[in-house]
Image (cartoon, rainbow, N blue to C red; front, side, top):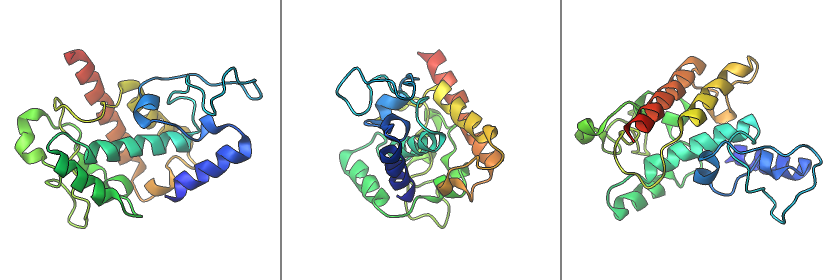
Length: 198
């Protein structure tokens, strides 16, 4: 992906890899983290500090992290290992699914386990989609990866409100910004609901 390549170049040019890269998507998204001040000496031998959470990276890196997690949650959802492998193979292509680049409606993050039959992977995809991943796994189903946190989802919505000049990442440019913000607000409500259920 071109966006990931650009982030790698920025990490090398700036000498601040924690602003553009991460080691584990789920680990970074699981905590807010902290930022190191520019020029601060590293107190460890790691290239990316262990305290780095989702708030430290550059906005484009935060958006890529969020969409990578969405794609992984779509592909690695619960069922049989053979189904997960097949869905992961569907993602091994140079393009992204339309639910990440054009229209997030098929993701339908408000689904619950009550509607499981209509929530099978591929049952809610657009006609022009060859990925067969939508809708997003319903609430209450045990997935391979952790649910996205409320603060993380709300931060995604905030990123879209900050800059009138470049609110969306390059792969999101054909997506309506209002719809994209609405999607992340729905994901935030979902996370809030899930945290109340625990």
